[in-house]
Length: 156
Image (tube, rainbow, N blue to C red; front, side):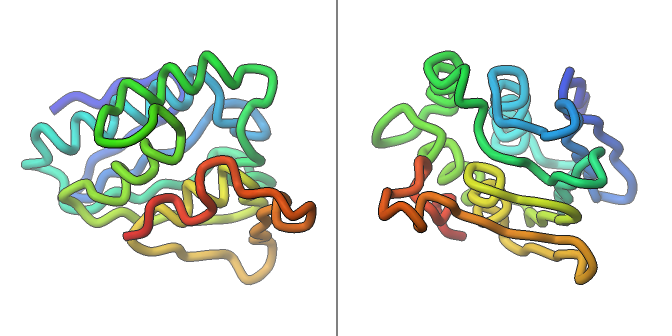
C-alpha cells in the first residue's frame, strides 16, 4: 500500500501509520492538505490491510493546524466534497467520514489546534496533547457563530 502525499509525510511501521501534517508553519486546512487527507481516508476505507492505527501529528512545533485557509474556502470545500458520503459537500462531512474509518485514529497535538484544526483532532478516536504547549480553540464560540465544520468533527 502506497502513501504518497505533497502535504503529509507518512511512515508505516508494525501496523501504525504516522501521518505528519506538513503544509507550512500553520498547517492551514487548504486545498493541498484537504486533498491529501481525503486521499488518505479513501485509502484507509478501501484497503487498510496493513494499517491498524493512524497517528496524525504535525511537522510544526507551534501548530497542529491553525484553522482552515480562509482565502481558499471554495477550492478546499470542492476537495472535501470528493470524500463523498451523505449530506452536504463540506469539511464537516469529510471529518465525519474520517471519524468512521475502519482503523483507530489518534491526533497527537503539540502546539495550537484551532478552528478546523481543532475539529480535525476531534474527528479522531483519541487525542493526546502536550501538557506544555497544546492549545485547543474554537474561536467561533466566542462570537456566537456555529463552527464551520460543526465543532465536533463528526464524532467518533
